[in-house]
Length: 233
Ligand SMILES: CC(C)(COP(=O)(O)OP(=O)(O)OC[C@H]1O[C@@H](n2cnc3c(N)ncnc32)[C@H](O)[C@@H]1OP(=O)(O)O)[C@@H](O)C(=O)NCCC(=O)NCCS
Image (cartoon, rainbow, N blue to C red; front, side):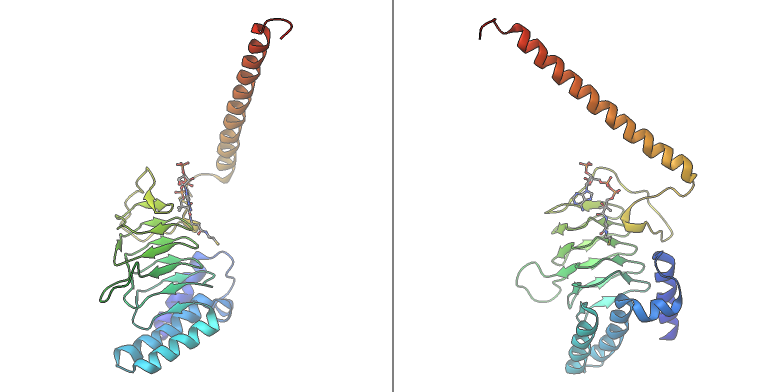
């Protein structure tokens, strides 16, 4: 139990730049508290102590704002960031190294029995407010955009966004080791920060140039229309 707790604290410190010490993480991260409550509730659930399991889960919800059904299976080093409003259903399964933001729902799509909640692979990021519904699978290293509604299976290494969620064009580079992109954004750490800033400025300049060109063209068209209009009209 303490090994898992130490691992969870290390994961949060590694992933959240705002986490300054292990003590701060232990005392101020509801995502961590929710997992501690869930481990107890899940053990009760497996031992067939169903009422105690539900009670522990509801108490955890009361304390953290994160509702995890005691039957849900959650892997290692999962980080629920901010957490408020997260709902994880009974037959949901979450792999290792996943990152969930606040108001994520892993829920049922319609009334059904048996396996009715999603299965999330390893190293998946689910953005704030996203809903993943039904017994679908979200593949390893996939990313779900904030506020997306996912109704279909998501292949591994894919980013999906929107309502209903659709893959964005590019495929993510396949990674063999767990790799974390803060806020789901790919970042190239090999770039010098100054070079990165310059690249950003260059992109902005290109955009401004394109806008100026569009405005100049519109103005020229307007002038041409005015000149071609017969005098007196
Ligand atoms: C989905 C996500 C991971 C994509 O990041 P990315 O790989 O950098 O992708 P881009 O920003 O280049 O976006 C790709 C396309 O998807 C669109 N898109 C990105 N996120 C979207 C979202 N949540 N909903 C709808 N469309 C979205 C972009 O507009 C872009 O569309 P375009 O190609 O037509 O221009 C990221 O946008 C996201 O939602 N991360 C979660 C962040 C979060 O929850 N933060 C909470 C912090 S408290």
